[in-house]
Image (cartoon, rainbow, N blue to C red):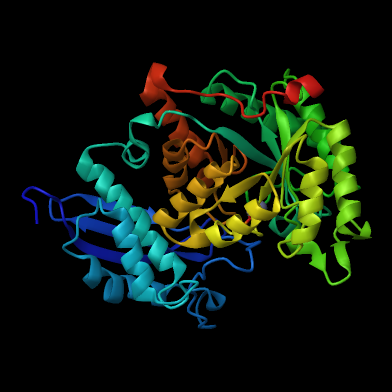
Length: 433
Ligand code: PGA
Ligand code: ZN
């Protein structure tokens, strides 16, 4: 034990609420120097089949079975005794120790929520003990790239009770000169969209990620509305503000194909969906499509990427679940050209970093992402800067748990001052429009 090295002295966990009013975990890690760090775990609704398991109590008498008291008990009774006395900067070792303590392939014994909460809080405690902001501790001296935000302004799928099959229609304010300006482009477009919806007597109620959730005649109508809103905000569609989609197709994949039940558009094959997207890419300034097909449709995805991947970013979310095992297959089979990165899909900070490193080696892009069920925790904001992924998906510029991430990024950009970098990974988007 080196002299003066801070050690973990206490870990506890409690049940709190997420942005949907469901229970989730908050973990506290204390060091013997008096440092106290907190982390809260997010929770998805359109989860991938192979995600690490979030442990729920399944006690129907509390929160419809969604309580997390057992996961909290695993933190205090199993994880805490094993970690106390350790140097919090040994992140990889701590994470691997928890993986071993759990002993399952999907973290189902202790719970991925329990493990991730500790993993994130340990990183924060180590950052504080080092006297560094989290992004600088995790990313080192090179961490200075602010991500282009993907702001989900129209919500559908399982995130809203409306007519849209596709889950997310996002603004990509990539033509801004700084992150702060990108946030302004996004917020101004969001407000313009609200005005347009009101004028058309459409509801301005919002979905789980803060985007509007109107019932429209079809999915394409959302794209037309967004382009109108970008223009109404005085911005140029494509060059200044582009569009990204996350249809989250696993959520409407059926035996017979893709069932567009909410809009009433019938069933489509992988090829038909890809053709639909291709037509949209011609007509609208789309720069990225995530989960355009379902998580088990590897062959469909390969053809989808062969058809569209030269023109736009093709992101895999449910199909990879931030797991190097699936990402490696995707790289070998050219399934996509980018991956979504969600720490709670895999369950530790170390494995999340490994997933990003694997993508990098293949020349793939990564988008760091929130979940539809969130808290005020801003870990992913610092994490995106630390990893320099250049893209983050954190919801609409609305609702406290969403803007918390954007506000943290504003703070980081300000702190970095002249050293901050903001550049578009989609440099050609404007030229097409
Ligand atoms: P989820 O959705 O957090 O509800 O799983 C987000 C996504 O599909 O990207
Ligand atoms: Zn997704």
